[in-house]
Image (cartoon, rainbow, N blue to C red):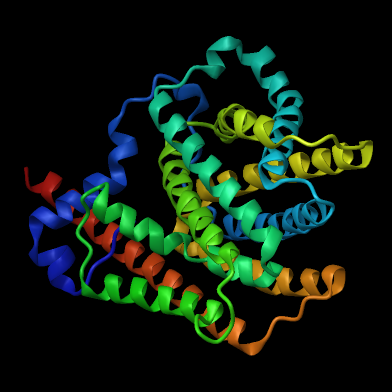
Length: 343
């Protein structure tokens, strides 16, 4: 993700604009060996928004199932594995017709390393998120996960070397102030779940950055399939270390988790294909009222005004960073087109 402070960030600093443009267009710089499967341009904002809102509802339902299974005494690492292996089981029949139609070549990818990064990041995010749900109210855990775009800003600066100026750093700071408001250190005992939620958000941030890059050259089904395979492999060993015998009811709930996870990931990946992140990101924040409602109805959890206030700070900061990213990306594209015309 990129953004700017003033016009100088994306106009006066040619080198910074060019670097930001390179970072945003890096996925396009690699020639795809699979042109037949390239996604459509991102010119469907209404569909993207609808897909993101649907994904938000599905993710909230998934959170509710995870919390219920955790309340039954199943370890978080075991839940992560059950969610992953059943998501893979659901994905296989979905992608099978495509593989039969297109052949095994469909499974080939020009970005194996990026898939691996996404798998590792997703594993970190899933384990952190599931562990947080075991101890925190649904709305509180959901609110803290809204810091994912803020972690993405930090990652874009530290990993991608993008220029992040005062305005964006201020937004990041405000967002993490929102986390402090929710956690309330000194007022109530600090739950370890908050730290797990932050770890989950950091993992999700890296995973989302990877998805945005992958959707430039990879179809949605392949992205989700690779992610499901890697998640299953990466969670298998930790789960084996804490495994507890479970009954058929837990296996069925695991199937529900896997199914919801697979479908929601497909909606999420498809949403990024249809529209830019800055357009669809606000619809992801609908997860909070959904989580508050589900927590109240299913688990008797009441979301207080302090949590809502902290969530507003986090969501506002995250939305601001997304809007600034869109502005600098557009400026970088225009600068690049202008430079090409002048050559």
